[in-house]
Image (cartoon, rainbow, N blue to C red):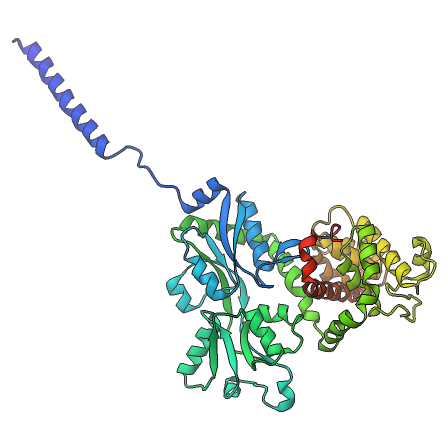
Length: 477
């Protein structure tokens, strides 16, 4: 064999050996390593986000607009941002929500859960979305007896019940370890709202609730009162499922944008702004009037609501704010009747007798419908109704002036959250002298809208058997 042939044979053997080695290596070590899909990828592919939601006013409930609640709306906005649907599993106590969160098919649990040190050891928390403090809530009547607590020492001898597996229980246990005498029971049967109801009826002396939970429920249980704050500031956060690193990152990024866009401020304003207007005496009288006075006019509210495609409980709320359901009410400015219509407006609406309950209610409903139609098209969502109610109170001209002023000073003129900051400025000369309609007591429509939403919410809660038949503004019959 000549040298040339030997060289060719050697090269062939060498190439064969190299090819065999490379193929063998590739068989055991793929060039492109297969990465399993993340939880976020799986959610997007299935187009479904499985969530546990606590059935409570501060989290999730079925209202006149269908499913609603601060935490529900927040999660729905996130789900919409990644183009998936919410698949809701309802929990009725915090203990139940925590148990359901352990299901491997659950992606997010939303139950007003504080991110406590103990919980952080056992749960995978996502982003924080709300800041609260725990408050001791007791029966208001205890003030007269002198046993209403003002500090932790004052809890000695009182009957206190909190939900099992809540952060409130952790707080009590910590205080007991510090040497305080507290007679506390932990219930797996009752939600925080149930316990607030028991405090209101004085079946128990006190419970503990987060500040946002207390603020919302104060409208429903007028006999409860915050005794004192028992913790520092705490963060509410969602509990995420296992292997949710990418999901958490996605939620953090989205929540940051949601905050910066002003949408979070709008959402907080929608659910919490009007609780600042709580008045114990007025709210107590409202509850009494629901039973004693409203039945006389309810059929007219419902008939007008059907005729003008408005929620009847909204019309009833407007009427109570205007006249306290007094058909002969009259102000020093000359407005009168259940819906407090001016004489000039009555002529435009075709109302012949403003003191006739049916005529007044139908006239007021027609006027509110006209206000809704007059709200600029750029105003969207919940702000449209609030704009219309403000115009019902102060006039559309002043509302349009407030929009002009809002835009001038850098506010969003189409957002109620921003506009209610601007309306009070209409009483200041340096502002109203530059506007078309001039002076207005701009703080009044802000309080007016807040009060109506408060009354409307109480009515919806009182008549919750009607809720399944409602679909929102313009559709509730």
